[in-house]
Length: 118
Length: 515
Figure 1: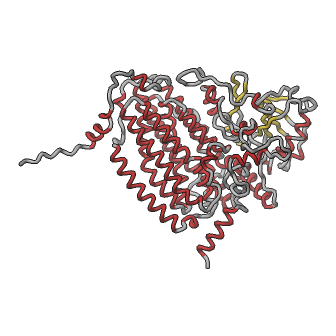
Figure 2: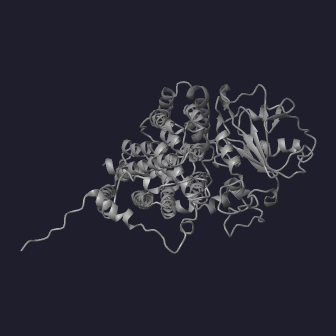
Figure 3: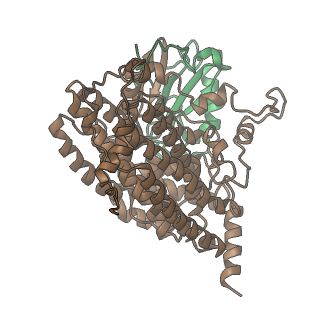
């Protein structure tokens, strides 16, 4: 048994997808720690990846003076830490994103406030 | 006529009569039925009488001694309160340390009371049962004296009024809360190692020194008085924790790997909770005592190092996360305060950027890291705030499944990269801030898939009041969550600059010191 207990202890997980309005996606921007941690947002699976960049991501990261300089064609993406190439014209679901996946992007040439990765 | 005078009992005899002598062998119930939790953790105890209570305290002596201490404590508190002692603190930023302590730590004292009462019932030896009873009483007294001593601040400052309600709800308070919930839902032996040893012995100085010395340095006689009152109990708790771990290690060689795993786990969990203390020390005390890094070097590296050298003869190694924790000392406080600066709208205390002079102090204490990685961040925020563009992060952060802290910790060898770890369990993904938190999950996943992660709970719709209407067109989910926290927007939260606390403190102090 995967827990020390006096008798059987098995329950459904607290954070299964059925409990949320939409699957959760975690998103981080590398080298920009002005945002202290990656974000967690529920996003509808039919949303087009490119629309996510213009909509929700602009809302999350827009405060940073470098966000306006991001060239999405040059952005490098990672999923669970491994290099990954999303198709901006396809939906989140068609890009293979599932509940509680974690993705992050690196924007070469942009290294945060005064190059401090902030 | 000859008088027959009974000889006064010696200390040892008294102790035996009033503690172990009160124990008895059951005749009509099996021992396993009376102590049902002794076996399932895998710990083997052969002879309970080998447990030596290091203090040999009896209930009557305890009562007398503690009553005397509390009389003194309340006399000091009365004097402090009646002389408007709160106006003598360095500045009102200091008071935010008390808010953090009252909401985050005081409820843990109460949980420790419950934990030791439970364990005191479950251990089969009379010696440790009595020792746990005393500690259980200490802990509830500490909770009470803390509440009393801080209640005076609640008359004048914001953010104190809903501390108990908030402990069970507010996002960062789930960090200390889940730490203790994890401990009290463990078996009795794990609890003793977790709280009695890993927390009370290995880490407690790192909590007490900044808080109590911080109070003294910043003119808070009230908090200082309860700290001193608690200190003599704390030394007893430390000794009990150490005695318990030695007892477990000496009873059976099969106990050693189990105890080692608990040490790895609870050192790491305790260390993660101390994140809050690190930022208190470097950013929240207007008059600093010492830096977090200096405190870590003295109380963890030197004292802890000597302790683990001593335990090596039992086959115990320093906790698995030890090396990483020592590397983090240059970064922890700066990264942690940045989290609260980000989410300063969602916490019932105030945040601020350090002044120019305070940044110089940080540079001098952290010559290898502050200017390179953190000064640009804080200076940028300060400049933006001056221009009326104070940063409040409006999107919820990703949390670690185990410690429940936003995922802000960086890779042990690269302070520019967030540390991401993950595990798959029964078809779902779980995320962690560190190897330490991932290892804890991987060993007992069924426990941690039940984590009440505040961010996820908000998205599940479980953190709104009964009158909230998510279908209404002007529904603002974050404001509804703050209402559910009982946080008064614009009063309890946001920047220290412009806060009613700052304004009031300055006006009252001017009245007290000027004509």
